[in-house]
Length: 122
Image 1 (tube, rainbow, N blue to C red):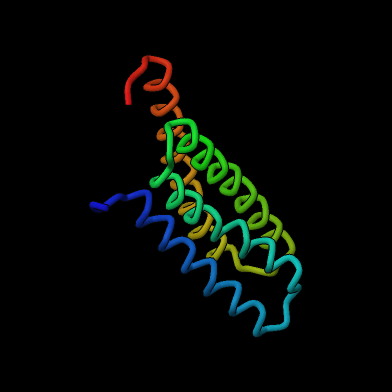
Image 2 (spheres, rainbow, N blue to C red):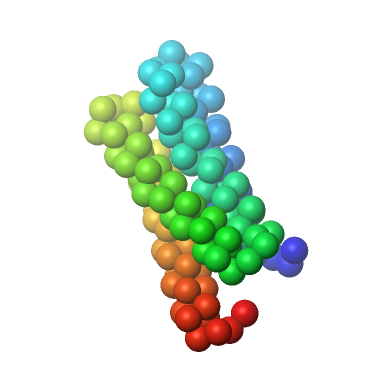
């Protein structure tokens, strides 16, 4: 697959989430909450990757919509972590900005795919 900014950003984001969650677990923070962030933050890229190999336009849209939902969930957990002092404002700002960028790119991809499907384009 040629260079795809959405794939690259989602992979970089997943690596950052893994590093943060590993650090938090080492510092004995709340593991149940950390696992929630780890799951949603890494699921974004996994569903994008799967969507890029979808068997149909509908499958592609479905996988990207799941990624979009995971972005919203990840933003929620990041906000909870910041508000409760589990992560710093600086950590939050960087990760939230990256997640928001992913969300906007996913939203545009889903809207384009839906529009192309409605117009009968592939």
